[in-house]
Amino acid sequence: MNPKIKTINGPVVVATDAKILTVREMVSVGKLKLIGEVISLEGDLATIQVYEDTSGLKVNEDIIPTGRPLSVRLGPGMLGNMFDGIQRPLKNIMDKNGSFIPSGIGFENLDTEKKWDVKLTVKVGDKIKRGDIYATIKETETIEHRLMTQVSGEVVEVAEDGLYTLEDTVVKIKTEKNVVEEKLYQYWPVRNQRPVMANMPIEKLFETGQRVLDVFFPLAKGGTVAIPGGFGTGKTMLQHQLAQYSDVDIIIYIGCGERGNEMTQVLEEFPDLIDPNTGKGLMERTILIANTSNMPVAAREASIYTGITMAEYFRDMGYDVALMADSSSRWAEALREISGRLEEIPAEEGYPAYLGSRLSQFYERAGYFKNLNGSEGSVTLIGAVSPSGGDFSEPVTENTRRCVNVFLGLDRKLAYSRHYPAINWLSSYSNYIEKIRAYYEERLGKDIIDIRNELMNVLLEEDEVRSIMMLVGEDALSNSQKNILDVSGLIRNGFLQQNAYNDIDKYVPLEKQVKMLDIIYNYYQKSKAAISDGLSHKAIYDSNLINEITQMKYNIKNDELDKFIDLNSKINNHFVSVKEGL
Image (cartoon, rainbow, N blue to C red; front, side, top):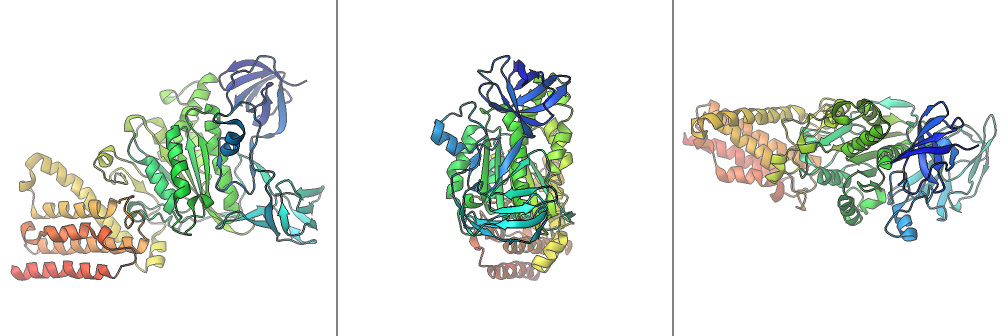
């Protein structure tokens, strides 16, 4: 006898006669056949989290077990597609059902009718082990989809290269127990981390083309990043920049509980964006997962796990993957609502006591790995946080801070003064600086960390100088303090501030970033030395030179690095002439 619905409380359904169910099992709920997941069992009662609108469900309707946990289907057809929080393709649903998602449409996911051009990479008699690649598919112009087996054994049958649908069997593998038919897809439980051979050191820069990130607060491939910020500080825009310009193979963008118009903006902009690394359309390497604020709250909680499972799947193929979650605050609010309906004892601000552990379970799935098939791949997790009123002391931000190694605090004052990215250099940090020091040396032939640290100290000194200036006025500042304000202005306006709408400045190669850093550092060293030699701030200050250094980001194109030699000479000549004038 199937379990039956006893009570319905929003997305939470309690079932009776549920001894045949297991925790984390996926079930079909009621006559509407809504998708649900068993989250707890107590005697013959089961608590089920339903991922669709429960309007129309009735008491005593049957609950049908599926015998497997909440899973996603992983195979060709995911790239360039847009799914909801439980991997249902939204475009297909719209084509069939119009603008609204009806209840009970089932667990549609990938197109089972489309034929893919499959190239088999194994032959009869081959020994194959879990994680090995048995076929490849050119899914897009830039990404080769690699089909991986989930069993170990001997290949006993192989199909010819050709066109096949997802459900066609292309390889048969004889294991110790039976013969397994390999198709063009596999299922994987979303809450289970995919296995790897080994964790690798995180020591490669996650290049973004954004100066404040690549030099001052570097991200690393396989790293964890939090981007907290209040309304209007540019979280979504920064994630769009990372999605377009970061040097990874696959982008997975999750709109988790955000407003529908923000996902609409993503849908309108992404198809027109060009990937600077390949010259092809950005959507060819992008998967969008949309679970906006008007969609079922329980599916919002699942969307994070759906996205990370897809990311791990492509990582296993040997790709570098970046996952953008916008935002984890809305995900935490879904946890809070479900926890409340389960009548659990609330912790700070009503969030469940296990908020921190759930966040850490998510972020710990990032990393740089050696996969089961011997390839190397990474998953970089970038989570936006939307604290109410920009208060970084609230529970989601504080718990996230404990889980991540890069914290990019966005500042409302910077955003309102048109300084983008609005990353506050006083509240932000990166724990990867020393880990990727060797990467800078190998890539650039020089160690830039010490220069970065000196200029970072200038920004910290500026904060102190401005506090003094508020008390005594600018005229009372010493020559060295006035020079600190000049140099910090060059760092802020000439380096950290970046224009996403300027063709030259929106993406800056690392080589140009370092040349710009050297220019500012040279001015700082020369000006500091001149003041130490007794020159006044008024004597060394040249507004035209300051302006030229500030505008170098626009005036020197990315492929015109030789022009930095002339600018450096101009700085040197300026201080020589100042000293001679003395």
